[in-house]
Length: 436
Image (cartoon, rainbow, N blue to C red; front, side):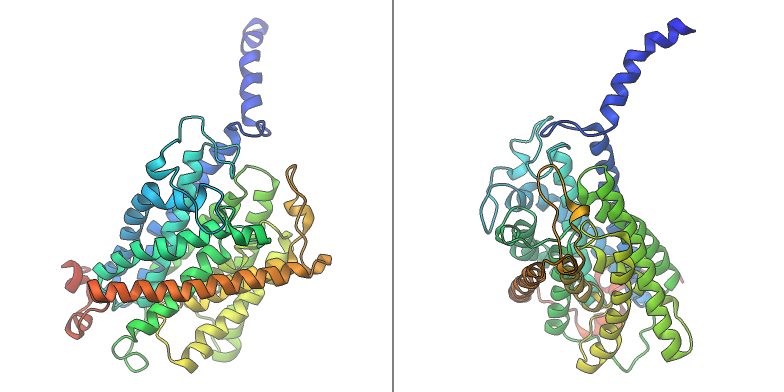
């Protein structure tokens, strides 16, 4: 037996050396790679089936399949575009405003290639991980115009908007562009994902117009149980979304995951409490909306703050997003069907700003760089930098989204006709319907 154990000892030591700790800079680490493979799968799951179920449960029965089709189509279409050109323009080169063409159709990526932005995992994995962010951002926008946008228009919008809005933003913030050089911090997508999706959703809802009967007809959700299941998938997937943005299997990823979970919990509780006080009953829709608001709001701050900060940020998200999804939305009469702006847009703005308040140097310190402090630790300038990031992202998104919509309107038209809208998009656009 001793001889047998001694024979296996060298192999065991080799295995341990490759699965614990971190490899040398610029070399592929097995633990980080395994962790990021898992996170990539989790984030992809957030769109299909997570977002598909979440959105489908909140629309009317006649539009369930059409709503799910948007998530499925965004997954397929954006993935192809990302591999072909969008990844290269987002994450290669050192331009201030846009990347270069060195990674078009993954040119130059070999078995052992690593990105300077993720030095311990294969670059192909980094590309795939970032692809899942682009996918869900495009899919999120569709929720604001559910029940009335043409499927052909949505597909064309995804193509144009990806390159006109998402790609530049991703490069500015994550690819070494001018906002990153300025010092804007966004751990997992407050600007790139949530502000962009929310603002684009608001612009699209205003340009396309409200649903027939909005504010008058019954537009109650078809099946909130589907939305609850979707929320659960989103919640778990968010651990890959935020935890994976550490790009390594270490303590920072765990801090981000715990802060994320606590923010979701606080958002759900606060939203429910407000409903309970104002309406006498806490709704299921309110619980899951509050959870998603907390998740979206903690996203940009998650890898820069302490876990208990997640509770504070989530609680703020639950209150402010509730106000935008109820009072503000009804006051200004815009038909953001599934509250993409009220939850993701507002959550992204708040989270990006709050990252500048709560950022804690000890969480983000690394061998390569000093940690980043926020207002509470005496660095008031960071909050101002964050505000610049919010304004630049918002303005660019408004202009880019409007241009994308106008092009779509010229090519395909944006909205189904009145008869198709009354019939339902499942039948009108896809020739299918749920069984009675």
